[in-house]
Length: 134
Image (cartoon, rainbow, N blue to C red; front, side):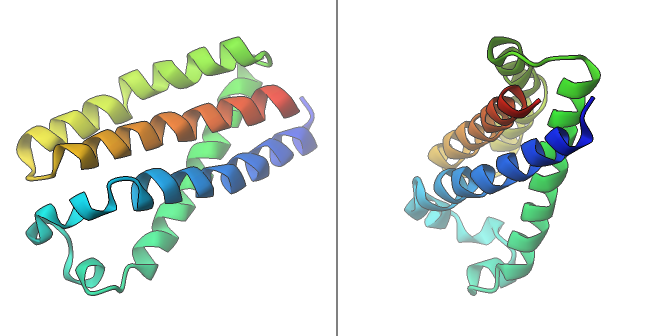
């Protein structure tokens, strides 16, 4: 395994994921996040979300690195196999978590849709980066 290729895949995935996160988590259905302002932390509703964005970005780095490491460890170097892994992970973790949260927390349904699509996009971006660079 070439560690330089792994690092390049992680960097490429993180850069691309920052755009997908921005679109799906920040732009798509942006107005729907304000449908229930009481569910958000005060700092976020008052425009002080910089700290939350920094932590979310750090978690994106962890997600991308873990995905690339999984692909490298299991010798997943083709796009179809990497995409299958991405979809499998999405079905196992983020999708059920987001839907379950939406059942118990007052979110607008389109917020859940945008976050679920954002996670799918993030994992598919990781798959493309891993297949391309590993």
